[in-house]
Length: 347
Ligand SMILES: NC(=O)c1ccc[n+]([C@@H]2O[C@H](COP(=O)([O-])OP(=O)(O)OC[C@H]3O[C@@H](n4cnc5c(N)ncnc54)[C@H](OP(=O)(O)O)[C@@H]3O)[C@@H](O)[C@H]2O)c1
Image (tube, rainbow, N blue to C red; front, side, top):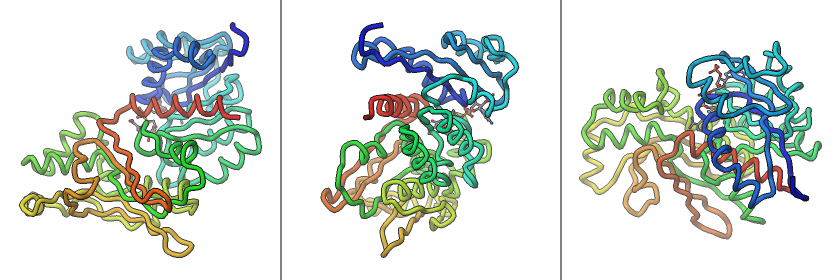
């Protein structure tokens, strides 16, 4: 290994759509990480819920791990330390310096991911997470723990997938004061509204969103605005430094938007969007998710399908927008790769 090369042991807690996309991205970028960033990595642990656990201090063959999961088999066969299945034992034994946490979200408590991230930090690992739950339920605690240990807790992919939102403020906007924001933060409802504008019924649009894997079997978390409310809470908590719980966000979903209303909006040169906003009021932040008609003068107007957008209003930059087109597990994986590089390169 060349002088100055940073060698990282990586572990995955959760290896579903996002974890596997990140594995493929790491394989694709391995050479570039070495030549451009002097960074070499070895994956020493992968844990899933029902597809086994593998730990190998000498390195797990990622291609084989991906093939095993594609075949629906168990990762246990790759393990040099068989018999470890409980997540807490996995974290203690995986020997990683960076933990990628990509387990399912729990909107109500953030658990068990909060405990996993805390454990990873206490075992000396940077914690990189795609999970919104811990951001809204334990951001301050996990960030303080990371700081006390000289580590990072980063979660770029929790809102707007791989698009830089949290790191935009952290890395590139020093001394900026965020007054508020508005945006479209839920892909499923934006796609449903776009399809209904094109003449599909609500039920047809939901069925299509389910068929391409972006809406859950029970799509109410998206349709009733919960996912959007969690994202509003996450942005307010981190970027405005005012802890906001999803339950405190005023919330109306898209069930009341009929084809007739979409048509009326079109005739008026407008579109219905599920708009997410936050604004300061004294010491507090008022978060809101509700359908609104937007006109062509809004940066939200042209954002259709699964794409998303956020416009920030700051004291120095009055309107700064980030638009993400066609997100998916690959873009989410990129957010985690960027977090990983920012964490290990940070001074
Ligand atoms: N999909 C996206 O594009 C996207 C975008 C932004 C953020 N996110 C967030 O990223 C996270 C992962 O999403 P995903 O789409 O990859 O989900 P997923 O495909 O359902 O994968 C979840 C993974 O976690 C494992 N798992 C479940 N419970 C576990 C436990 N208690 N301990 C260890 N592993 C456990 C699952 O194992 P088994 O399958 O074996 O049960 C699976 O490997 C979620 O928090 C999600 O909100 C996803």
